Figure 1 (cartoon, rainbow, N blue to C red):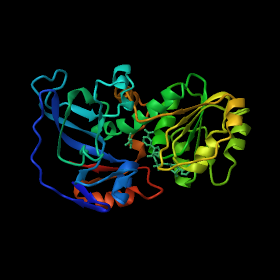
Figure 2: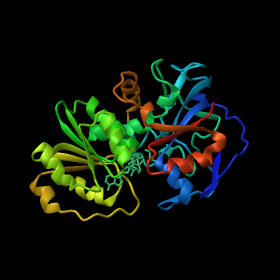
Figure 3: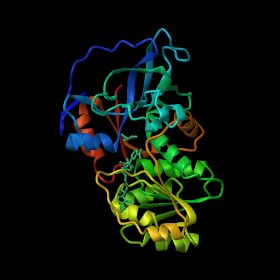
Figure 4: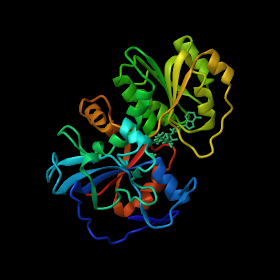
Length: 338
Ligand SMILES: NC(=O)c1ccc[n+]([C@@H]2O[C@H](COP(=O)([O-])OP(=O)(O)OC[C@H]3O[C@@H](n4cnc5c(N)ncnc54)[C@H](O)[C@@H]3O)[C@@H](O)[C@H]2O)c1
Ligand SMILES: C[C@@H](O)[C@H](N)C(=O)O
């Protein structure tokens, strides 16, 4: 199923791909709809990149191996796997350092030039396919992708035992990052959002404090609850007012990790305050070396991946699914390929 222009998907018949020697052929079963898929669907472009050829969307995916390339070890026909959607060049400075999320030549599913996962079969490098244990369904395994964004952000935030953490935004990234922070040892987790049902959901999932960003002065609410501020804050909205206020919620020597992405986001920054309070402000881009951790977090019950899913629809209802997934109360919509 390809996006041919903004707002229009078309079913196109394609040959089943043949896996290369180091690839596995995967029959897809579950694919999540990410905010970036919705952005491509609604706008047909992102920054200076545009959909000029039909593009298969979907990069949160899992399925079953149906064929293995001649050189593949460690995967067999019948294995259920989650697919890591970015394949880096493996040769540049950043790939060699292990921060392959920063590779400039990465081929990332569902971006122009690299088809995504809303299709029956995907041939993918075995190195970026991860076996799922019995305790993890393919539906949950597909969500290793947004969990990985959370794992990377929590690592960037250096969250440790006993820390207090604020997560701005209770979308999929925020909710999953909150679970990951707890698993990393956070003793107190506060979540901020502007939608009632999302605040309720954060509390149901274990947040100690839910702050309504429409009503509260977030920094004041944090200081009331946590004294001089939280140890770490993770910004997962991309909304300028939230970005502005997250810079003011940590204690002196605390860390702010910016995950939220929005084009042309500019916010005023009081650098004097950031310097005086010696705040670390760090970006967090995609993820590297996170899939095994994401799988163990689901298997161990530390991250409730299934709970964030609001609906599953079949591939022939992909347009309905995208319209519904864009509703502000929805956290995660899935396409079920079975
Ligand atoms: N850095 C990365 O690698 C990376 C990866 C994936 C997603 N992202 C970005 O992370 C952000 C979160 O992703 P998502 O899929 O959860 O998005 P989402 O849009 O589903 O969730 C964002 C949440 O923020 C809430 N929100 C909006 N304005 C707010 C405000 N002023 N205060 C508090 N909450 C507010 C919304 O109600 C929503 O629940 C997006 O900007 C996305 O583009 C970044
Ligand atoms: C990391 C991924 O989830 C994000 N949507 C991106 O394309 O960068």
